[in-house]
Amino acid sequence: MIRVGIGYDAHPFAKDRRLVIGGIEIPFRLGLAGHSDADVLLHAISDALLGAMAEGDLGTFYPDTDPRYQGISSLKLLEEVYERVAKKGYRLANLDTVLIAEQPRLASYLPLMKETIAKVLKVKEQDISIKVKSNEQMGFVGRGEGIAAQAICALKKYEKKKS
Image: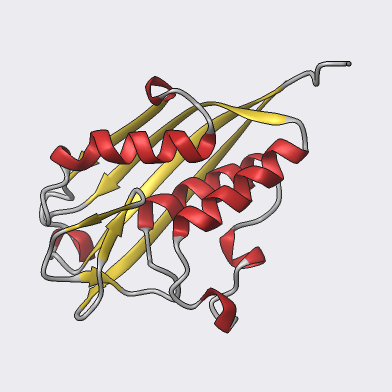
């Protein structure tokens, strides 16, 4: 059985914050505003995984009103979300994502993002696609006010080996 999920997230830029995308820190003069580390890519991926399992979104399990999640690493959240997926007998078949940003330039960071995400999701890097697109100066992203991300995943049911 195959299940498919889609996720989206967006965060505005903020001063005095680290910029964390795809589980890695990107050197830039601004970070993204958010309750957690505001990793827009990992939030979109987590939402896609939860959506494939028909379990809502990140806010369902990690509300931004809960002080326990203030500043939490989105890698930790992704790890916990993927544990939920695995407990239901599913594994990631593939993941396709798009980062939408005018700034900073992110292409050189994609290999490390893929490596980082693949480790958490326990898949090969070639099972993950991360693309970067500009918004051609349209909307909040185009004006350089923030970053958005989209993700779609396919999960496959696996048979547990009998001992």
